[in-house]
Image 1 (tube, one colour):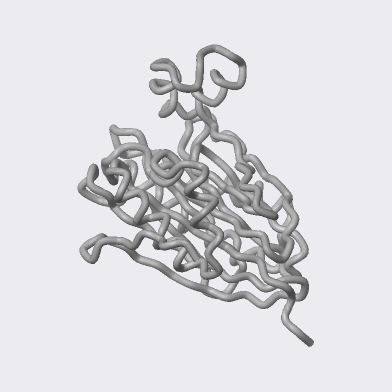
Image 2 (cartoon, rainbow, N blue to C red; image 1 turned 180 degrees about the vertical axis):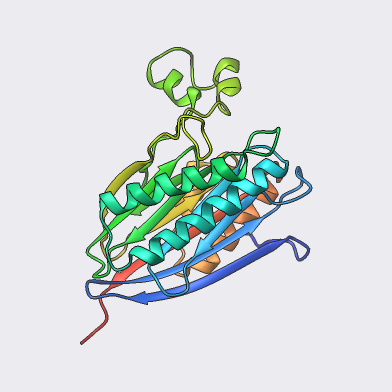
Length: 266
């Protein structure tokens, strides 16, 4: 096993680990978050559900009350909606849940003079474990490691992503860097845009990563792939967060790792 980096003893980290034996697969999940060195507080929000195969991350926009309020409100509303609908998991219910998240965050921020917005990325597995749904708004990401190949499954809802895709500027240009933080979709957007909903398969051996841009901007592709290969999700989370600190800790960083195992023996 590679010698994974470890977080410094004084890092502000919280983590949760859960195991979900479902009919078709067993899921092992863990999550963690670290403040880093740039911001005075952590405006990311993490959820790894205690009883449902469900996890999510959110990243507040900015470093003020609007950022904090958006993240906590969005996550609390999504969790309540998912739990109320369970065991029904389908696109219609998920779109209803996202619409409620948008409405609640907009209402919560109506009395503030600053932007109240956040990203939101969630993974919700159907009760039998045969399929999962990704919910995506903003630029927090979902990756899948399968058979040694690490793939970015979600799309960043940013002007930078559109610019690189359509050839407006090179990916490493100053223009792309400026556009990196111009989100085209997010929770709290005045147009209340719909989230991307993606149905994805789950195979034993798969490893899923949900993360805020504090991870994806500071830890490169090869290192993410290497760190996700560890058998224990909690160790992978700790190693990813430690890597962001080593890279400078320029942002709040949050990660959820879900490893898919064969179904429990009967």
